[in-house]
Image (cartoon, each protein chain N blue to C red):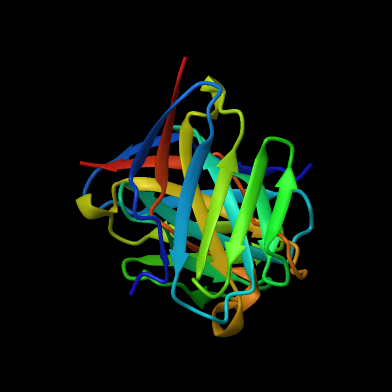
Length: 113
Length: 115
């Protein structure tokens, strides 16, 4: 079974803080993704990564950056947290094969006050 | 633009009856479609998928139907159980959007199965 672990289930941060969300996978998957989920908007892609030190912008990258120093770890960084970044953040991985599903972690519920 | 749409935000069904969740897409290059189930405060879990070369895929109580000409897919749950109550997301990938396997998701439909 694929295991995708997000370091925090719940976080509360103040406006302007720098926030780090960590994701670790144990299946040696090449590709990793960060999504956010908001009611009525579904899941929207923030950033993804093909390989170590590689990153690509998703659909809503503004206000975020990412880091992938090791294959198993993909970090999402909120440079200066704002209230509109209050959301559920979901990390996912995939072995890049035809017709493979994404495997998600349990999510981090971030509240920015 | 929303390439994958779930137009029903919620659905309520009686236990034992059929649940039908619908999803429409606009990109004819999509070639792989998936359904995920999500409980509150948990990540989405993969439920069932279908390739564009098929029009039906079945797994136990879950069946996904794909109508490529209408750009429409649906998920049937028979019989529905209270434990099926969750938010269901459809997702798609393919063509120019493939990019490492990323998925494009619909807005979700909240299913409530009443005992």
